[in-house]
Structure formats: C-alpha cells, structure tokens
Picture 1 (tube, one colour):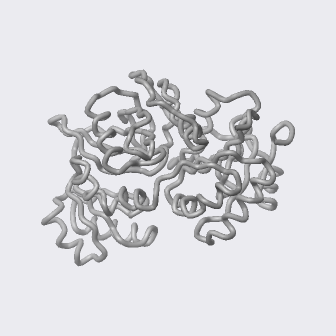
Picture 2 (cartoon, rainbow, N blue to C red):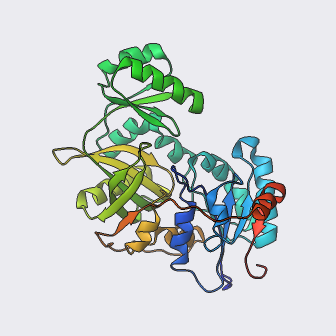
Length: 355
C-alpha cells in the first residue's frame, strides 16, 4: 500500500440549526492527520456553510443530488477523483446513502474506498421498521405505528397513546397532543417527506445518544455515549456531555450483533423514570456531534477511514466521561468571489499545491 498521505472526501457541509456531520468528521480526522493528508468537502448546495471554512476544509466540490440519477453522480465523482485523487469518501447524509451503496463497486474500481451498510441494513434501521429491529435485537422500542392516511391517524391512538410524535420516514418529527395537532403535523410532514408517516408514543425522560462503528461482522469497533443537555425545538442536541453506562454499551453491542452493522451509526435513546432505555431512532451515519468522540479519546471517524482501506482496527478502548460540547453559531466570513466560483464552476480550491 502506498505510503503517500491520504486524500479523504467528506460530505455533509451544512452547519445551520440542523447541522450535518461533515464539519465534525473532518475536525476529528484532523486531530490524527498525517503530514500532507488532505481533506476535500463534498457539498450539494453552494450555501453550505462548511464550504467557507478554509481552515477546516480547503477544497470543496459540489455534487449533483442523488435524485438526479446514478450516472451523473458517478461522473462527477470520477471528475473529482481525477482532480484530487481521493482515497476514501465518508458519506454523512441519510438521503445520499442509497446512491453511495449503489455506487460502491464502481467507486472501488476508481480507487475510492468507503465503509457503508448494506441496503438490507439500511432498510432494517428505518423508522418504519424500528419496532421489528427492536424485537429481533431484544431492545425496548416505544409503541410505534406506520400509517399512510388521516383515517388511520384518527384511530392510531388506540395503539399509540397521546402524546405521540409524527415523524417522516427520513426527517422531521412533531409532538402531537390531540387529533387536530396530529392531522396538522401529518400534512406538514407528508408535504415535505412524503409517505409513510411514523407515529411513535412519547417516552418522558432524558435523551441519550450513542455514536458507534460496527465491523460488519457483528462486532463493535467503538462507541461513545452522550447525554443531551440542551435541545433545540427541532430536537437537535445543542449541548451534551459524555457519559459511561454499561447498559448503553450493552444496547449498542446487541444492535451490532443483531444487524451485523457495517460502518458508522448513531443510536438515539430515552431513559425513563425507572432507568430503562428505549431505542427511538437509529441513524445510519455519524451524527453532527461526532467530534466529541475524538475529544473523549475515541476517534471514530479515523477508525472508519482505516477500516474502509482494509486496515485492521482493533476494538477501541474506553473513553473519557465528562467531556462536554456546546454548539455555537457564528457568522462565517466569505467572499462573493468564492461564492460565485462555487456556483459557476462547482468547485473551490484553496489548498497549497496540487494533490
């Protein structure tokens, strides 16, 4: 294997009130970067804030939305590969994962490694099948129903008691306390994300998230658990602290054994008043707070890069509890020249020298 420094592409450069994980992934990778290692941001929108943070992401390329089809998606990645010589891509967005999974073999032929779940794994952790996953893995899941009409919604409270969340199959969640609120939420979520809709009863308690990496054989490479301290109106953790609880590790290990998960993921859980954990969601990629894992001593993004390249990564050790993050919002300085270059050419290079 070549000893030259790696070139690593990372998607998900949005850093607004619903931040994507890309900036955090690159920050984590930079903590353990070899001299000369390069980082390339892969964005879908010229206004993604991470584009304009050259100290973190010097080179950026726009990608076509996966909905435009696999051919233009692959053609663009082939162009980027020719320009910068990518060794690894770390996708970080739910909506792009099917395209990357479908493109995996072709990317390998280009010389680009990835570490992705299978299509079957991706479907199994869907919000629509979470209850089934919980049964198979022996994990508690709140009462959940999948519906496709307001008539079903009117009757669902017999199975899923109020208050409950009305969720889109990909994104979006609104708490409803009555049928009127539920119907209003139903129409809003359908308009944005389509059918089906997932209805899930609310479990009062504290929110915990676990970021983890699976080896694809049922084993856990490493994980870090975090308790949310501040939550936005969109349900996003804006502050959190690492915690160590053997029960959370056991839940994560059970998930890995049951699904044989390959690559990064995030488990979202609620701990109720009796101390029991309920699995409420599984995200098939790194979360926005993933940088905290590296701060706590377990650099999971680096593990993903190494595994993608076929290198041995032993199960990672314990991490430090009590490490905290607080997300901030800043005005990132940018120039119209850079913005216009991204819009017109689809790329922006500010690195020193060619790759």
